[in-house]
Length: 327
Image (cartoon, rainbow, N blue to C red; front, side, top):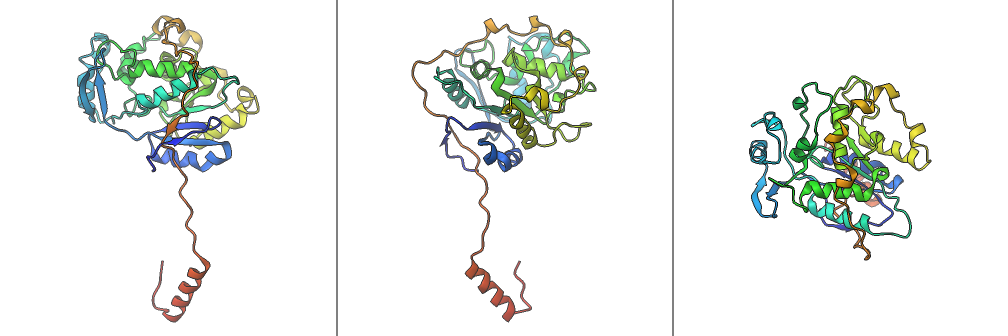
């Protein structure tokens, strides 16, 4: 894919994913809904202390990732007992701090007209720096503090979270965009809202560490292997959102499980376990218009065409040499 940054027009919606297959899938419908895809291939992770001093560079293996997280004194000892020293889980940088800062600057400007751009984010290896989730630390408890897990998954700081740390930047980005325009579309089966999945409420609680007002229905699962999936491809989920949101009928039309399939508010992680909106780092509104977003967007592959003259020459060649086949 082309890695040259392109200026993103303000009226274009954005989809972010680490997987090239998902990018190509969404690109198949992108033109019809005025959307552009941003490929964020997994790269090495750099970690910093609270002062922004580099601690370790280019982490690419889970064993190194988990060992470094064990040194983080802001993560509770209870949670650290569940950090596996070795795992086959992938590791990747996901959406980078530079990209996050661009979105914060763009969304923090006080525009004369309300912004209508929708943001669609993958989760694993995009927001999360790991290739999956592990809720073994929950241990059948109903009220779980998800802040430790959020620090483990999202942060690039070891120790106190820096104001410019990745976790704080993600919180600022989600706050600047707001709950109505941000979606997480993931094939992670833990995001399945069916009642058969006891971990959906914890996944939702994890997203609400980033944005306490995150809408439950904006966490969309596209895993084809689960029972009765709502969507099997991300393009299907995004098209459903567009078909409903821009008809002002998302809550009525989008096919969702019955309300009984969703955990009640009492079953969600306690509010004490999540940061209050007042505690969130707020993106400051800028008096100066920011520069336009510049990301390396995915472009559809050009269709192969055969010139008429070339076709005639090839046909003549086959006619004169019947024993030779060109495929």
